[in-house]
Image (tube, rainbow, N blue to C red; front, side, top):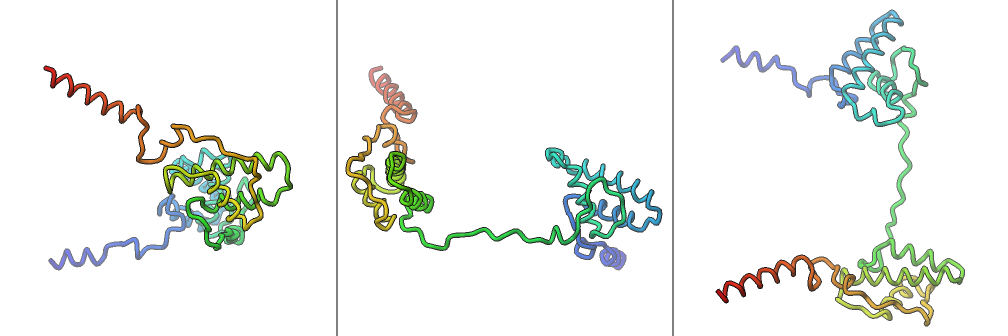
Length: 224
């Protein structure tokens, strides 16, 4: 029992080891690069690093899909070595500052959405169209926008909606900047469009065909 306790106490845990800089290459690659850093002969260092780079490419074959995958491997050597290794790289040697640069923050609109059924993209499109000068292209954009808004409306609301409701929503979402001309009208919804909502099946679709087939079989059984 004392022997087992002694062995457990001497076990090497990952939490006690040096932190892995790039886990995808594993601890052995990191140890090999650290060992190369201790070699005094630069030619031998270069020779050993070239062999390590080849192993790194084998361990991460997905990098071969990149046009500059070898360049990536040599950059990863520098990262794992802590940018503190004197070797002759076939590519410009990166600096730690280059990799410490933080990306520019992505702009996120905090303004609440006016109508959830349309979403923010619809609001952005309305604002863009409202800012255009009046011409035939703008008329076509308004009609296409209204048609798309009607489809979105039907997904979340009723089975039918009048074009007047859609036109009023456009005016409301644009804060009165975009008014649909009186001579613009939406075409009637087709059966395909009106029954394309989730959970609804058109008469004669695959599910109904299956039901009709079952009904036909039941009728035959009753006759027999």
